[in-house]
Amino acid sequence: MYHVVIRDGFQSYCTRKIEAALDEMIGEAGGWPEGTSRGDRVLLKVNMLAAKAPHRGITTHPAVVAAVASLLRQRGCEVHIGDSPGGAVKGVERYWRICGFQTAARITGASMVNFEASGSRRVSIHGREYDIALPVLEGYSCRINLSKFKTHSYTRMTNSLKNAFGIVPGFGKAMLHMRSPRPRDLAVNIVDLYEIADFGLNITDGITAMDGRGPSTDGRKRHEGFLAVSRDGVSLDMALSQMAGLPWNELDSSREARRRGLGLPYEEIKVKGSHEFVDFQIPGPSYLNHIPSWLGSLARILLRRAPVSNSKCTGCGVCRRACPADAIEIRGGRAFMKRGRCIMCLCCHEMCPENAVEVKLPLGRG
Image (tube, rainbow, N blue to C red; front, side, top):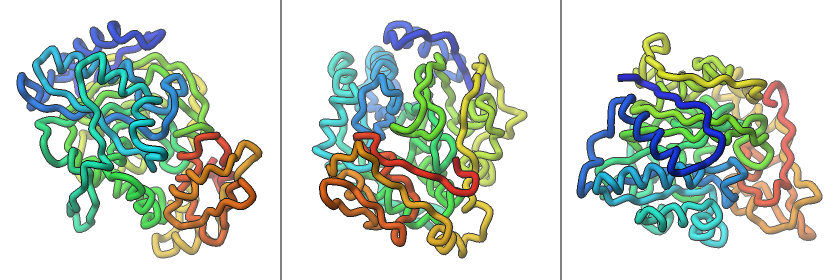
């Protein structure tokens, strides 16, 4: 058995080829987890960051989702697909449709589940509390993590562990940014949520990936052509981070997970397959990680550069509604960010549907 299985050489998103490959890869990674047998209900937790078409490389591709759903349906499982975006503007059904998940569900006999409308329950872990979407906690025998391989301007990379962030419904995710003055503080929340999600299987879509200033419209879409599978998301993140050129222990979420004893020591991870990343651009570490936590909020006030809207801004208000610090107002049909209130969580940058938010990152964050 391998802890991480990587299959390279995918030229396009052909559901039939992806399905055949994943069937083999899951077997090599230890087989299907418990709770994926006939009659079981399985939740596929996708990356649905924004209402963007699949070719943009921002969300999990529906061909990958359809392949996993089809394999589970063949096993006799009832399959549901869900995630919570930063703010379901104009309704979450719009996200389902534009991201292609609704089509994937229809052609495989799966169903969509609305994290926002399903309610939430407060969960305590390691002395911290989170409001978690009920579908993650109730009614499913197994949860499968379908992440997208991308860079992230705040956390540097986003993959299996970061994908757990979406189990917090609605704008609760923005509030977690608000209470985490440093990226390493946010990593504590990310690993908490990953533990709560308790994924039985982790699959990464790296056929179309993103580098540069991801995870949304400012990132550079690029063809990488790989899929990765692991029963352990921590080991998967460590292996892929190392291959991409970022030592695993420089990724805050991986380092925090290993501090808790999650995953395996890097040298013990058995990987089958590999992928060669060429000129993969990863954002630098945040200056905030180099100061004491009690100075984090003050440093953000003194050193930050608030994002600005450019000429593409339509004044739609998506960024204003997504901002946890109430730092944005719409004036004259355009968004204006208030430097004195901005906490540099970059939620406005992630959620803007027009790629109209520009970020200048100080002190090595670019």
